[in-house]
Image (tube, rainbow, N blue to C red; front, side, top):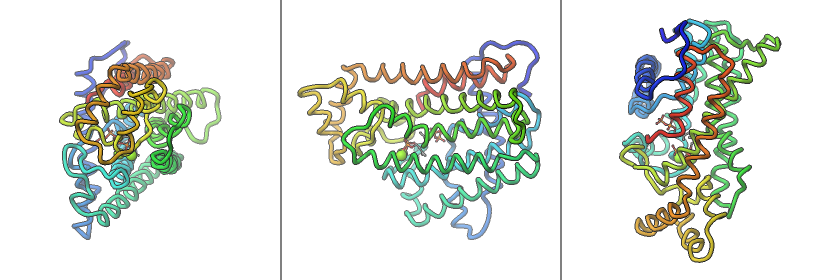
Length: 347
Ligand code: IPE
Ligand code: IPE
Ligand code: MG
Ligand code: MG
């Protein structure tokens, strides 16, 4: 059990990673048993991406947010499973939309099984996510789990639409970008935290007490800010990262004309020939590796890499502060370390 009575101010990254690994093993076992059925080829395609690993950060948020108050592990694992299944669904469809061929160091589902089967495999993961959430709700009697998952999946859809439609825009504002990444990514982290709270009995969907509303708000703030930090770091890694660590291609966001914090900063800071060079690569699917590397060096000269790191850390800090009013346990320290990790991770 991670809960301690003594006060914990911080944990090391190694402790955090060991704790995530231990929880991921439980989630993985449950996920495997959840993805067995007929037709076998459909279930194999659906299980393919989950079987390739992944950081399992969202279910960890659910488990730890629940554990801050309650010891209800079995139900927490089901709730956590629901967010991880929904996440895997989003990845399968995202890779089709983004035309990406690698994820978790392996060919994407549509590369391996073809687009039609990938769409169906994604749909199955989506449906299974709601099955897990509804069982968790039945077993805990904690109303609101399915509702939160529905709200998040609607937001992800809206965010993914904005992400794709921004590709065709010349520029987007910082406000538009933040709204888009909240919807496509941070909303699921927010949901993961809230579902943990609901399952652990911290926040009840029915109770309107002030304390309850406050705790709900703090959990939502935590998940949301962690998610924003996480996506800004994802955008950073998509340009400045190492594909052998992230398991995903580097440079494709630029080639596809994705609007990220990096492109917003570049359009604001670059001028003259720098801007012309940048714009010749942004949205140019035929840009060569050499052209791309030239632009990445230029972005570093403009210190856009460092500026992104600073912004991601600011959101991580906000996430950490959102938990300040909760008891100072080891679980809280792990959640706070997770927020820092989201903004500094290399994979
Ligand atoms: C990738 O999420 C999709 C984004 C929201 C950026 P993760 O980086 O959590 O993916 P896995 O699960 O670890 O592969
Ligand atoms: C992240 O999308 C959001 C979802 C998958 C819903 P991205 O397109 O930014 O993430 P990666 O970089 O492909 O993982
Ligand atoms: Mg993508
Ligand atoms: Mg995408």
